[in-house]
Amino acid sequence: MSQASKITRVVGPAVAVRGDDIDTDRIIPARYLKTITFDGLGDHVFEDDRQQLRERGAVHPFDVPAHRGAAILLVQENFGCGSSREHAPQAIARWGIHAIVGESFAEIFFGNALMMGLPCATASRADLDRLMAASEANPALEFDLDLERSQLTAGDIAVPVTMPEAVRTSLLTGNWDATGLLLDRYEEVERVAAKLPYVSGWNVV
Image 1 (cartoon, rainbow, N blue to C red):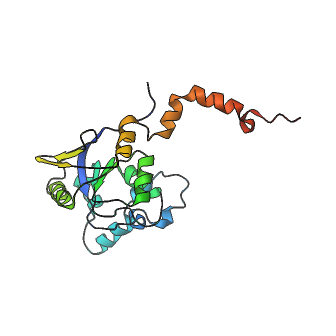
Image 2 (tube, rainbow, N blue to C red):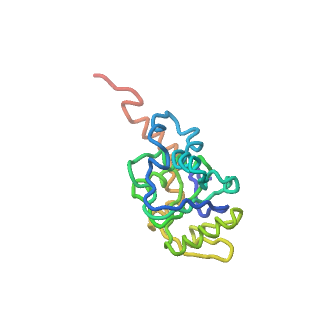
């Protein structure tokens, strides 16, 4: 059986975070970049935004108890812009999100998300407005992101989603999972490693 993880669909409630150009520093503040592992980052995702809203008497969507079990994050334009940090998609995923659907994504954020198997699909702003409104009106509403059909459904709403075909294929086949692919061909990895002098030892003449 293949060890690579195929991702064909993500099903569950959604949470909407509105606003264009939400950068990586807002997703996970830079002070958390010194962590040695990604453990615990989910507790600090959008931390400064959440704190600022609390101080104004408002509530960030990630602090709404009804959204705590959300599996899909809905965002708007240029999500994940700013400095490159894989901590950003890691923090989102460790909060519990398994896929993100937005109007557009910053290229580096998109790549970092793919490397950890966090699909980022795009939809039109009009469709996202309908999906966000549906999620906010009914936090328990189940969303179904079907990567094989390139479609996101929620109740009576069904909208097309897109992503580069090579990315979609890598998620569907499991090729995004470099560790899984290595485990699938572990005997070949061992044969190659045995020929490497810095693994098997140098032959000094």
